[in-house]
Image 1 (cartoon, rainbow, N blue to C red):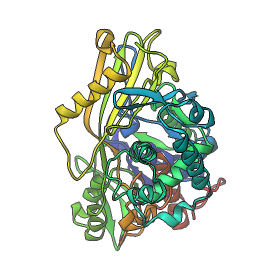
Image 2: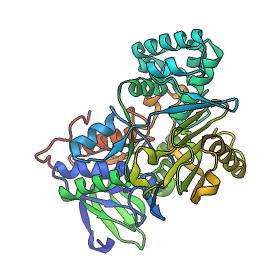
Image 3: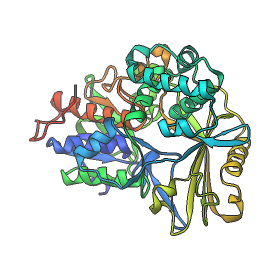
Length: 444
């Protein structure tokens, strides 16, 4: 729909990624007139998928940790997807590849650990299951691992897992609340790779929103949030047009959100955003004619912050028949970024170890040297999840924030979905529209 044809809406949603589409779906289900403005032609943001030579490339590594806000909302909204659960994980240590002890059978099989390590790891998993993640909000992952894991080889293993879970090497600042909560969930619920790429989730959320009457406007550049009298009144589009709204949900990254409010001069929001620490990663995806070593699909590096996964083994639609798609990424320290070319070579070296011969069957590669994996890490110094910005924007009524950097619940896509649902609920409670037939649910 052309921008000029939208003059008024109950709720304007800025951003057509997972968070924006989730907010739109819940709002429209509740009877609101909703318009989503996405600056790109393609919806999805970091969840967008690109097709090339029959291969489906996500923007960086993506996995859905089930049992949280996202998988619950997808089920409620009717967003279905085919999936595969990664198994047969291995670890790379000292040039040697061993089985990863992810379950009791793996614990028995692996030669990575001696008998004492195996017993200690079993006890560690029992203790993790009993832990209260929220009580660890002020403790860093590094501190917690050093306290709970005494044996050197186990400490290396848990550090590698923590880096992969957090998408960063800055474990001295990341809250242990995130790591323990995610570790508990991974022991109880499967991890899903989405077959067909994450565009399947994007398309499903779009369909859910549009079924209830939401409008999705692509190539729509929002220049700012219109406000007066201490309340959001709509959005201003490139070219000078405005769209009036009773509430605005900004579902962008934190810096873009700050730029949209008061021309980037909203001091309360700027203070919040300036304190956030994101998690960039270097990501190298390779499309191959075939997988050189099919029996080694997932490799976790213990010697460095690297991870490789042949996702096509579990989600065959991401590669043409017989082909393979391997995703690798290197976790970085956002405070001390290195040379992108060196990081690319590091990932090539990981592929040499995990899938020797990959260069001879290479079809296409995608290197993203500084892709943002997490909009805001939950920091121990800020109280973990609770230290992230509130969904209700400071100082402006009717303005709400959503994304993986917002709200006290979840990590990555779980945070995006939880904050979006909360934003939808607050907009309705604030009188943006009269409540419809379907309640938003856990907008608390």
